[in-house]
Amino acid sequence: MNRDDLIPGIDFLHSHNIVHRDLKPQNVLINRDQTVKLADFGLARSYSLQSAFTTIVVTLWYRAPELLLQCQYNTAVDMWSAGCILAELYSRVPLFNGQSEAEQLTIIFQKMGTPSVNAWPTDAVLDRSVYPSYPSVPLERQLPTIPAEGLHVISALLRFVASDRPSALDVLQSEYFVNGPICTFAS
Image (tube, rainbow, N blue to C red; front, side, top):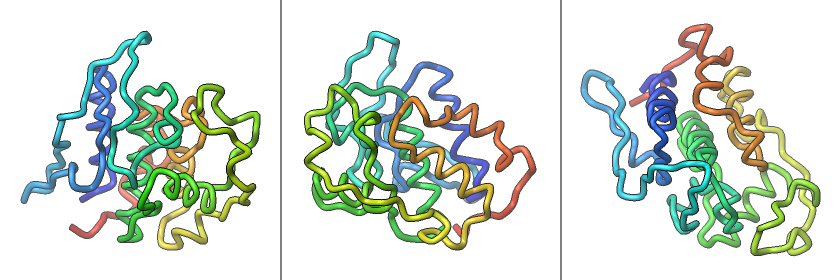
């Protein structure tokens, strides 16, 4: 699969006011001609600015922090999942592989750093004080095979604050995509 295939599909969904809510490698299908298709729309929903959804969506390893903290959310949850998928395509292992919601958050904070009190969502079901302050581990140490432009994109997609994550369109306009294929992933 070429790295250019996943994000356009997400952009198409988001531009049609659809949030997938269950993006994971198993829901990214690749045909013999290398055409990528997003699958399993069982949790997908049409959204608006007033939409309110359940937070029990997305397979645990690809679930955004706002879902784990049971906060309100939007299409940024799909972008978090895309960052997890891109990282896994390079490394061949899930970046965050918790066995429970609490462990998932801990692993995210151990790798990405515990967010500040100011960044912590006010509608979270858990207080920031529940978690120790972990420093972030540079992504280039966690994902040494990824080119610099890819690290920049994945880092942006994995920002704790959902509103700080780029949209699919923003990612498509990034240097990672604009400069043409840097590499392809093994199928």
